View (cartoon, helix red, strand yellow):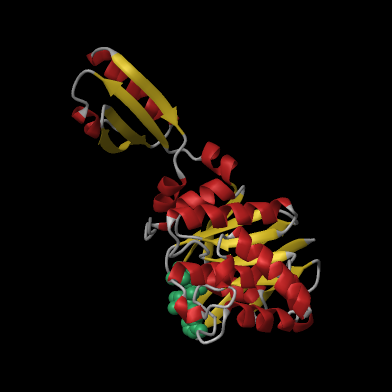
Length: 300
Ligand SMILES: Nc1ncnc2c1ncn2[C@@H]1O[C@H](COP(=O)(O)OP(=O)(O)OP(=O)(O)O)[C@@H](O)[C@H]1O
């Protein structure tokens, strides 16, 4: 069971919202989709779900398009809330899950398991409008997963959640992945992508600017960070060729350099000045890569 996206394009008038994106996500894998505002993430999701027809290209799940008859195979958490404020949590979930073909007693049973898991069993008979934004988000998540979909699409699942709820949701997402659910999610928060995903795709103006295994991307990325400590002022490193940025830390500095060769030269340069207490070459963070590739606009 694989999600295959082949060279999809979506044009709105003259605007290329998605411009030739291809990707493959195998069963049980989790793919993180990154991109600045307007990069084309939601449009890609809508094409995966069959809510929008691609201008060109195809989206296949298990080799076939996700037609209306197969929507029960998919769970979707939209970026914007899609719940009826006047319904109770139970009424809302029964309504949505019946559309997915589930029977009422099963819906209620699984709903209670999820509410317990998220430590909110008392919400069952509360109206959606009475819940806080973060708690509505939890219900929206339950609405995406209650029918146990094979493919789960999560558009900004962590937005508006406090750290405790973020951890709770992150754990639930990981458990679903361990069970074999295939997951694609978008986030502006690099930490969530770094902690959850093995694979990622980064979009910029509708095109993939980076794609693949996160560890390999980091390893093969030329730019490095040097974390260092010395007993003298390091400001002069600003003017060393190949140094991109210098940031003072509590007891030293982090220097961003163009490549490992520059990092090596840096070591000899500072060693000439005196004793070096710490010198460590580190892979760039996803944040660094995002700024470099997608030009910022991340909200962290
Ligand atoms: N129905 C539409 N009609 C016209 N333009 C659209 C439509 N939907 C999206 N767009 C445009 O397509 C581009 C991609 O939008 P999309 O919502 O996919 O971005 P995104 O990466 O999800 O952004 P965000 O992080 O802000 O949610 C944007 O320039 C947007 O204005």
